[in-house]
Image 1: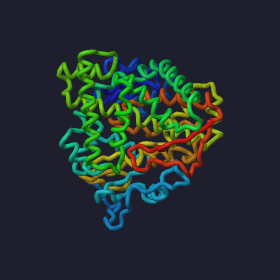
Image 2: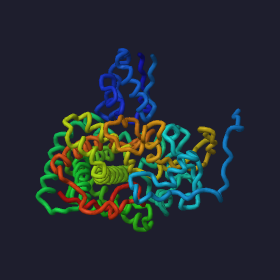
Image 3: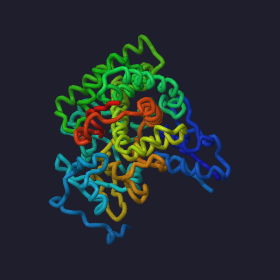
Image 4: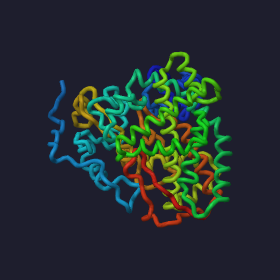
Length: 64
Length: 413
């Protein structure tokens, strides 16, 4: 899987972190998204897709 | 080019239903019958608002979410078609400024980002031990205090007030002051002058607090905000507005979830039993999401305006149209949540829109989650015989405020 994030759109909601904590984090200074792993393994597909769906800013794109 | 042959004709103003529709006192947790009918028959329809305007009411989940995240939709409180919550709102916004919840990007993003740091998943989680201790102490106080008691005054309002005061660095001794003034700001039937006065008093308070934080900095949000003012990143007006928004948003909502959630669980004893007896934090977390979905306390509808024409599900929303997007109907959409009127704390309710969607999604949601997880897993365990001290039909519900809930909750044990 390939994951990309758009930090311009990010509103620091952290819902990606709740859905897929191995793949997403928030930076300390303002809570904007940090992509821990742009190529997560297939077994994380459900969580990563849930993160993309739950992101209120539509800032996460997932390509299989 | 748009094929308009499949787009519904606009109804005439004369036939439009009045909105909001009252709830049924026998089913206080459900959207009212009028609203249910609208969702079932015309999930996208214009309605008549109190000021005579005719915004679109969009009730189903998919459209609700799509519109909240659509860049052609504005949350700007100054937009001429923004459906005002109460009389005098637009004039007040024009004269005295408005909080960033009523702005669009880029201004909204700039201001919001100055206060996002304390509300991350990590920071909220880090508060858990302190919050647990706080709630334990408040339950001790409850048990040692009068019985029966009003759970709203004695507990539901106190928890989030203490928490937001801690986060922001507001002295708790001032809580009566800001509680009184906040009540004025959330009423939909508020006298405009009273609302304006409460607004000014709270802003004045925030200004004084900012000054104090510059002299005596603390490890808190208002100190960070004060330092940004000094660094020229925020104006003083912007800072006091932000402080007021956070104070308001931080306690009224969570307080209502605590009280109304307690009532819902008391009315659903099988669900209450699961919650009381579980040792699994995942079950508690799931229960919080389901209660958020089921109660949808930020009700009636997020006010918006269309900046451009938007085609959605066979309707054409025109540039300049107003919209109301109610969470309580989206969260009861049967195509998304099976048997939606059932409180089922074991269902997977993630994806609910109780915290809204789009760029304005609740800033404090992660902190709210931790607070509610702690309250719901502590209160009923510590007081397992908790019950209503009055009949359900005697409970007064807050139909006419921004945030749904109960005015009082007399309980005993």
